[in-house]
Structures are given as C-alpha cells and as structure tokens.
Length: 338
Figure 1: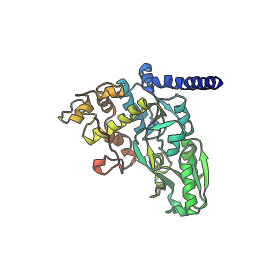
Figure 2: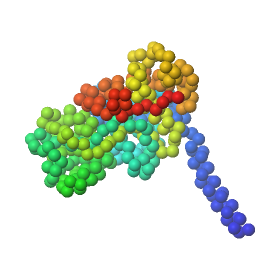
Figure 3: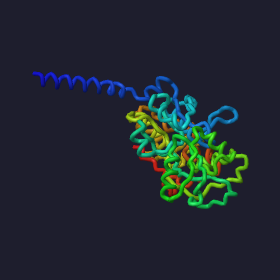
Figure 4: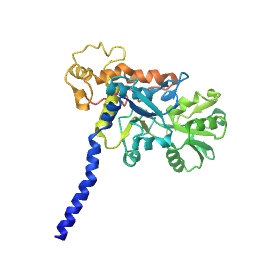
C-alpha cells in the first residue's frame, strides 16, 4: 500500500510539473505577436549595414530588413515591428525572458549557444568569418607578427574565445582588452588604446568607415573562424521557429527564381512550386499559421535576398562571396516549398 501511495504521489508530481509546460507550449510566440499586433525584434544599433539608426532616426540595415520581412509575413505590414537595441551580453537573456520575440543581431550559431542558452537558430542569413583590423604603418601581414600586441574585442561575443584558441595554436601571446560596447571598442581603437581590433569581417568593414582616417587601416586577408549569422528564437517554440525560418527561405527562393520587390505582385508563372510560394494555389501558409500570401507579403516589403544585400551591404564594399544562391556556387539554399 505504501509503495502504491508513493508511486501515485510521484505520478501526480510528475504530471503537475509537466502540465504547465504543456499549457505554456500551447500558445506560441506566433499567437502572441498576432494578439499584440506588433513584432518585437532585438537588433544592433551600432553596426551600419546590419542594424543602426540613421540621421533621421529611422532603423536601417540587413538584419532590420529581416525583422520587417517577418512582420510583413505574420501581420501583413512591415512597419508593425518594434526594434529593440541590445548589447551583445544582453541579447540571449532578452530572448530567454521574452523581452523580444526574435533576435536578429549579427549572432553566430554555435553548438554551445544552441544547447546551453535556450536558443533555436533559423537558417544563417550571412556567412562570415573573424578577421583583424590594424593600422597600415604597423607593417603586420601575418598573425604571428601580432605577438605582444594589444587586441580589442567585444564582451559577450565569440571573438574572444576564437582569439585565445588561435594565439594558443600559434604559440604567441597577445593582450586582450575587452569592451562592453561596440562603439567604445572602435573609439578606443581609433584613439590608439589598442593595436588591433578583431571581430567578424563584415563588422570590421562596416566600422572602418567610421574611423577618422579609414584609409590608414587595413583588414588582414586572414580568416580564423566560421561565423554563420542569422535569426534566433527561444528554444522549444517550434511553431515560431518554423515561421522565422521559412521567411528566411522565402528570400532565398525569391532570388533563385527572379522574384523581386518590384515584380512579386505581377509575377506570372506556370511553375507549381512558385504558384504555391505566391499563394496562387494550395495553402502552405496555413501550415505555418499564416495567410496564403505570406511569402508575397514578405518579398513585397523588403525584396529578395539579393536586394536586401545590395541595399544594405554592397555600399560598404562587402562582396557577396559565399552569400550567393547555390545555383551560383554560394551557400544559400531554399528548402522546397511543397
């Protein structure tokens, strides 16, 4: 009898612990965004090309456009999004606590982040790598020549660990100077408080433009890591992650098939997959909890991947590189829309 009571009590306890999880899982962030009528997107505000406030106080950038694309797909309006600026150390706590619905802030997908930080990653939107920027007059052309140098890095990023791994492998020592904010890092570097700054190459290209004398600085032709950057959702909400992921795939698919912001509403085709994509046949939107024309709405708002890239990153001098469709030898590959 005692054993039976113990087993029953254990079962009741187990059910009581699991039930809240089931109840909580019934309402996806997708439902909350629809009820609220606004998407909350965590972004960078200090990285021209990816996420920043322009002189008119308007949000611009590659990551910002993806936030607008999600808002358009879910709510039918790319302007129904609130962009919340986050420092690197604050981005995952903001995601875990529900302060934001989606994080799109030049964030690298790693095993540790995928398993330990309550995060689920959507497909990468930009394949990057860590590099080094320094003054030309130092005459440095290789990493071994960095021995004894002071190197600036941003707190809460993957760069510090990558730097430590690389210098250890090379058998050299450098002095890392960690800065809490990206803006402070580059201001300090420009003032000569550190010899070198290391980060994603896209960030180095972007921030070099803001230095007093950009031409006095070079970015070494060396890459020490893989940095797949893309949107992040909270762990466990598969429904919401599906939505964010398929919006990303929609921008890839549109570029593959020549669907642009200008022609998406008049695009004519007999291709069954494209007709499904545009919402002209079937109802793949219902499988995501979205309208039939969700993909059309997203592309009409910001364009296809190539347009998003050209508008935000090409002016910085960033080449497409591997960030091209697979049909052009790149890594961007849309999963079939069927």
